[in-house]
Length: 56
Image 1 (cartoon, rainbow, N blue to C red):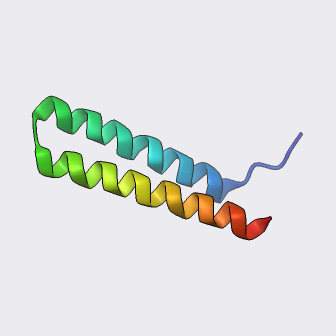
Image 2: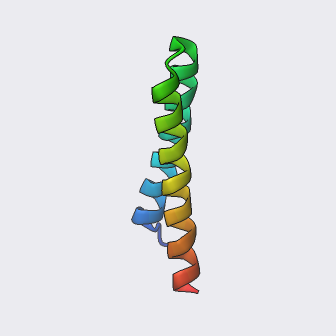
Image 3: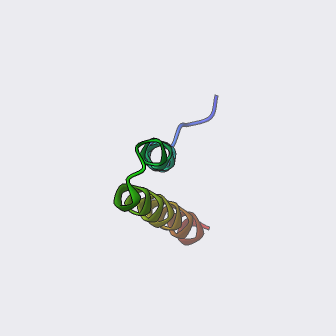
């Protein structure tokens, strides 16, 4: 079995939760939370991609 990289797993879960939060914010029609959740999701995703490039 392969070793699970816990930090990458947590980053992926945070990105999923952030974009899911954006969906909830759309349902509540709260523009500020929509923007915050989307920006946070892209920031976390960018951080994860930067970490992956740094490893290689």
